[in-house]
Image (cartoon, rainbow, N blue to C red; front, side):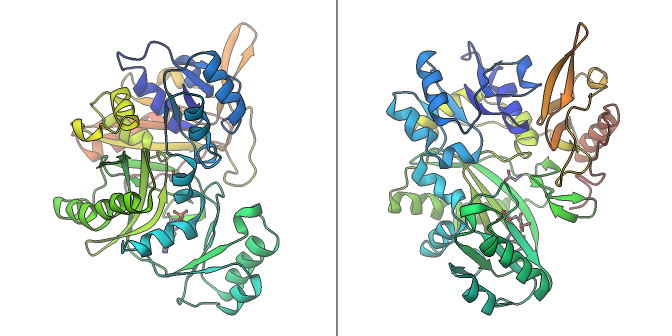
Length: 419
Ligand code: AMP
Ligand code: GLY
């Protein structure tokens, strides 16, 4: 069973059903696209008790947890207590995403390159430190905030507003009990997702994500408006530096600190003049990185998941395709602000045979005697195309995006273009 219902989980399900070892797949709660691959169960990803009970009743052989919230709630610990095998880090390890301060302390303790930082628990103290690392000022709510808890303030006014909202008004609730302020890093971002067990860390192919809503990296941050893989800025030298300066010290750090991490570690990097620094850790597959990474995976994903849960990752040779992938996200009009749901999606049958349309916020509705796919979230679809070259993949992704229609649809025109 896969837990979650976004584009990432659709990509995971799509890859898993190709494994000969998968006899039956469930997904909780799934979405309109996943329903074609798995039996969708009406259980929210955060319903820990419900998921544990369902997994026991149906004798689940493996549960793969997609999103960060159930991981931070300890879903994996609860499943394991019930004797159910689960893929994803336990609650102690999930703090690497659930607390930015925890991660900054970890990085500092293990001398892993990252931005300088300071922690705050009092609004008054925070306000006194306006521009402490210069401008722009990077202000982060410590806890989970669905990708919206980071504010890059250009002016004193913006910084004060962010501080008031996070620590005063608690717009992110308890996630704003603590704030982390960081040095601003310049450079090019890349996402390196890694399979990790207690002895081994294996990077997947690198990807680049586009977080802002508008072309040219303008407008507010979103969950991610598109990705491509492999990242065009990677060469062997950079890969080696990331391995030596970041991945190996991280694994060693986990071992020294007694963090028994098994799952996916998402390393968000800023790269400047060939030097990588960690911006953040997430403890799960990225969304929408997964939609451009997994289509390039040649190995059996179930085998990898099982190996990670048994600390056998070192025995595997994970194979990747040389083909390039570009994923363009189609979002509802208004996203990341308020948006409409329930719009009919047309043209899904017209996309090229070899183009993958991963559903994120979709549902289905019965209309007369037909089942229609309708919008049900902010990020609605991820359209992934593969090609022998990066340009071919990008051109194909956009050609197919234009075949799909729903009212108010918006997407960036520069995915895979702006590096
Ligand atoms: P995070 O949720 O920590 O990944 O932050 C969201 C986004 O904010 C990142 O993907 C970066 O684009 C940006 N960001 C976060 N921290 C920094 C930093 N120290 N310097 C520059 N940009 C940052
Ligand atoms: N695409 C960024 C994330 O999954 O956090």
